[in-house]
Length: 600
Image 1 (cartoon, rainbow, N blue to C red):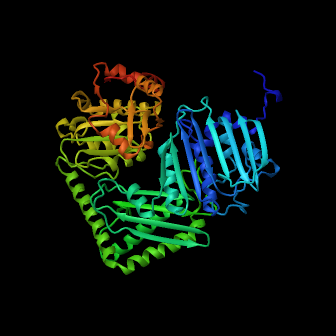
Image 2: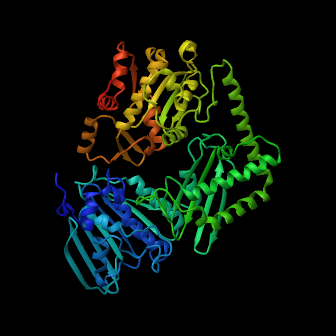
Image 3: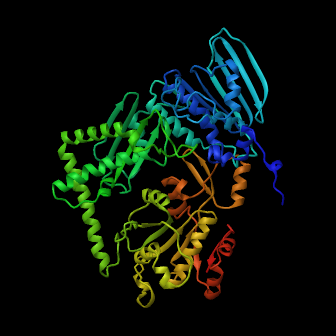
């Protein structure tokens, strides 16, 4: 095949966005990121004090979305609305020149171009300087430009209206819960701004304060008893950090930390979260050492419930979707130093609370150590000998084996610790070579020890600590691959667990009806198609890590709604071993989503 200069193409900005939408908005399962691009601009006008009203209007019947504000309005001169809608890297928010915006969430000059490129209809209306301007784009091409004088009171300053391109998105209904979350966060920080969400004429006005948001988002239903909520704010010129935290006394021990940066929910945390957690670990470690208590730094996070609000002049995120802050620690050094000093001062004025918490963590450490001792004996529960295993107390419980810490952490937040044990596996599970080689893998070694049965001549199925051993992997090829590898390993090392019917696959949905507090998993293609025909709001989930704890509870824990598939042991195990040694064959074998009963 020839390769010449004629094969080299130069794409215009819009064509490049359409060719690589994921590069610009991250996820194309639904158009929520397009709504957010316009919403970011409106909220940035609020952050700098020019807008007092922001409204998001969503019509799911016509798939039309509209975001408006009463700020300064996009400049009309020099065809600025056309430029920022069709030329990448255009805007007034770049980090080296922010005369118009000192604190903002938009950084890269990409948002409105991506919105225009991925919409079949895109309209900008502006009222500014006594003029009314309207620009209409169809399939990213300018079809109408109209500017006329306007002397009456302007109904708004900037309105962005669009219809997503159905060729790009799997579902035309955006993740409304995500938008609701954005407006809730903004309402806490912008208490003088009216924030409105209209979904099919159902109006919501957001008026949460900081305490209300913390109680609603950071505390679970099980957190009925907590320590005092500590509220600390620090600032350095125009930058600031606000931390609110407490410890749950009766909820799950897994920490829950939420955060936002310049009004953006930063779901994956990042530098600011790590700095705050390090402050707590250092504080409690030093105190425990001083009073002679046994303590590990991570004990300071047990039961932690916290929310961090950061306003930063030059935030750096891991990607265009901005879900993780990656600034170097040095860039936050002044704020973190002030935060540390403020937390130290708080506890210096309340040393009894400090010692109460340290002793609470020490008790947790004693429980772990006592469980380690039990694990060395012949007791039924060999609980937390392994740092990643979070055991249950029942002798008739269920062990969930999850793919990575993300799904495992969410599952810990919704589980019943009496019934549900969780073991997240990290790293690659080895393919079958022989039993000796498999046991050299740390992940598999910990799994076998957690099961409690031993292997080989020491295997005793009566010592299995759980009624059900459940593999909970993502509903994609990678997830099936992990299930495939794990299953064949159990069949080789602890076959009677499978033969006795104790091993299950937890089916996980790729799609669900997701609206407000309504969450209905769609397990089959037929269910998905029926929901689409009814116009239900459908969300696509790439994996278990994207499901919230209460959604995981529906999918994995609730006997009335979950789908568990019992794995049968095959008499032709030798032939299966040969088949499973080929990765491609394994993926083909498990690609069918209509599995009713799995046989190995």
